[in-house]
Amino acid sequence: MPVDMLDYAIGVDLGGTNLRAAAIDRTGKMLDKISGSTNYSEGRDAVLHDIVTAIQKLREKHGAEGLAGIGVGVPGFIRMKEGFITNSNNLPFLENFPVRDEISRRLGTFVILENDANAAALGEKWIGAGRDTDDLVLLTLGTGIGGGIISGGRVLRGFVGMAGELGHITVVPTGNPCGCGNQGCLEKHSSATAVTAMAHMLHLGEGLTSKDVCELAGRQDENGEKARAIWRQVGESLGIALATLVNAFNFPLYLLSGGMLPAWEFFAPHMMQTLEHRSFTYRATKAETRIAQATLGNEAGLFGAAYLPWLEK
Ligand SMILES: [Zn+2]
Image (cartoon, rainbow, N blue to C red; front, top):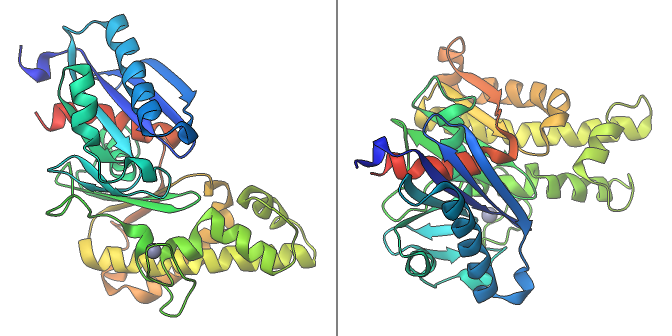
């Protein structure tokens, strides 16, 4: 049977702390979802075992005959051809190991490996905020910042598979050092981690989350003003990055997702102002270019991973 006639696909999202897998049908309906923590401290074999077990459970329940394929989203830089992760802060033990082929071997079937933010962008394109366009950029604002670029309805991967690492765009030439070796990366100035660090520097409190800083920003006192200054900084860095992206791609849609969206009202005005100031392309296309919130939340990656087998057939 041709793959586009088959009923469902399995998507896996291997996050920083948990592993989720879902069976999703061709119309984008989630049939089933497994989510559990995976014990990263137990190392590579245990994590691979957890991935394979989750997929097997779904395959047994929904039947191997109807399965169009399996997509696995993982954090890190990916070498597509080899199915390797070359650099992953969260999963160092999976680096430089044939992850894709090992999962394939254990399951006895073909598997597609994809960067998690690329998968999320694809999910938004398939059934989320980007369903009406074939060209979009997604920025995932979390503890780091991931990026995914969808061009012509497909993931833009570059020749190796490492395109779309938008969290490492330089937004402050002499800014904060990043684990990637650069300094002033977008994720060092606009991620939840960056918000927490700024809150600490401004003596707003110990161990504040970005959500706490969002709540503080609603207050009409001195700390509220400090918190709003943090969000303006976040907005400015995002605006600089978006100006670069709009100039580079001239796409109609740029989506933001992740745990920082509740602070949208505090960072978006400055982000939009900076974008408008810095991008001629944006000013010239303002009526048709949208900067918007993604709609699938943290399930975007699951949908995108599941969509891959249909797209890559
Ligand atoms: Zn970096």
